[in-house]
Amino acid sequence: MRDLDSCTPAFIIPTLSPSSTTSLSCSTQNTAGSNSEHAQLQVDKLPVADISVIPRNNVTLRVRGYVDDNFASPSFLDTSEIFYDSRARYENPLVIATSRSVISDIHALVRLCRAVDVPKPPSILRAILRRRPPDNPDGGPWFRALRVWTEVDDIIETESFDGHKKSLVEHTVNILFFPDLHTTYRIPKIFLLHQQPPSPSEPDSPQSSLALPASPSLTIPGTRISLPSPLHFQLPVMTRLSFNEQGQITYHVDIWDVRDVLRLIPGVRVVQWFLGRAGAMGLSWISRKLQSQTNISGIQQSNDIDVTKRGGALLTASAADSV
Image 1 (tube, one colour):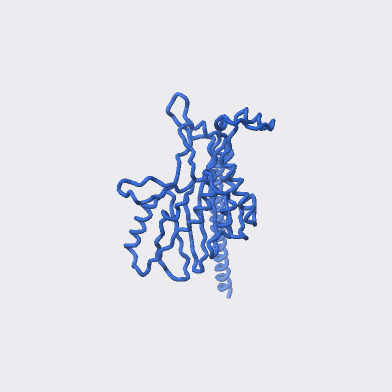
Image 2: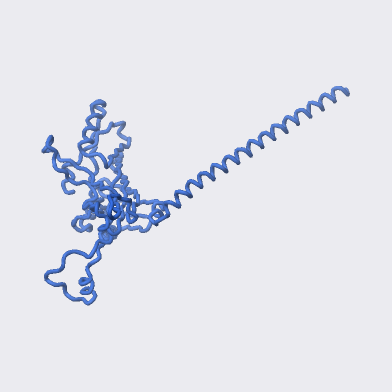
């Protein structure tokens, strides 16, 4: 994470006009090597005079890294002074923070909740009795209760002519209870960009790739059959960051859908599946009924008009005969 500046590629896009807003997106399933190859193909197709090189906004990756990384890192209060403006604003569907220190405290609490371990009974007893721990404490925790990590799906960045930048990050928050039960799964220690060893063909070229782990699963005892874990939950989140001219964040908002939150409850996903399809079929039935009623009304109105025209013609003919 600390060598991000040296290994982050630049994006090459066509320049339309000075006042136009340029946008770029990077998929998390592409490596830096594939991005550079794609950029080179775009260079070959575009005139040299119409090419503009815009570097990726590293602050977007660093903010997500300090918030979601499981590694020990400096206090976010120190880094927030670098990343956030003094009047920055943070919002999500539950809280609103209008101060940089409050934003730092919220992110620090989120980091603490990403790894919850249950200590061993002697440690719990010593904590209750307020006794000093021994000089040689016994190992790690009793068992791991909770692990939370983030997988970035896509990053979209825009820059306007006046230097203001905006970033849109699509990521998925993974929640896994009792990770020790998932014997075939290893929790990623970093949520984003890790360094890969150089390939034999390119020994001196650093590459960045995304740590996208496989989905946790439970193995049936005595067999090799693995089933999706009911203890693994996923919440899609959309993060929007706005930057000022100095590159500091002025507005940070995390958005998630109520439907996705309800899906975290066991069984709700199946209920939503049936209700969604039943609702669609119901709307289709109502639409057809209304269309048929409209067609019947139109036919009746046309018949009434024909009868009126015929009656008027008969009256005109009888009046002419009487004259």
